Length: 256
Ligand code: PGA
Image (cartoon, rainbow, N blue to C red; front, side, top):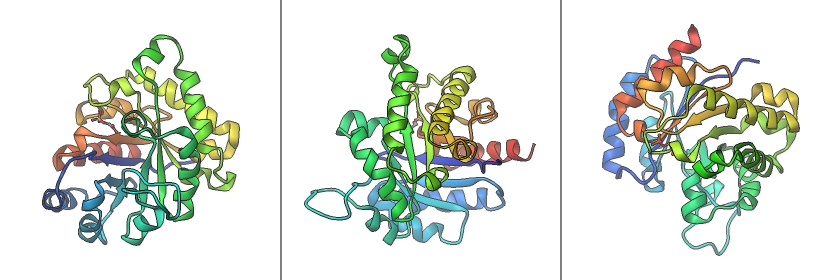
């Protein structure tokens, strides 16, 4: 089954609305002729509406970086899936390691968030990955098994391919220490095998991204790996030139 490459940028807590508008104005002409690569930028809540307006009619989708699992309720500071889709957002990052580690996001809540996102018509990017300690202890697969199984547990089987997974080794995020191609391929193939545990056909169609210090310089070897279907780039997505370069590399590999 052929899988459309997916390049997502995760801005984290960067860019005001004015900065976001400057970014998208610079990015759009660079990716306007891109074909066959899905492109998304995951931006802070306050910049979502402006980004949706500026990117309308282009190839660039606008995603949020988190959401609450409930439809509505007494959850001060939170945002629901319906609120995101109302402004024209088409997807959301779920379970990023920074949300898990710094803001207490749990596998239990992700079990509800992933299907809630799908229900609202959003594409979830479910992030999984091990710490350096877990890798050194030989616990990488155990961690990934737990996170993937919990996160996908309540997703209807026929909708599994609508979920995008992102393998992000925590030790590689923002550290400049990128996973080796072998580490990335092994982990991503393992995640695909875990999806096969739910549904074999879905495993062939589901897209799995690599994230963690991915830059234009190392994108080709990572995006060229057989099981890696794209990237979730943090730092490299803040600059329109470097983000566009990653998109170009993905496109060149897709037509090769
Ligand atoms: P990085 O971040 O590319 O800056 O390492 C990736 C991420 O956290 O999604």
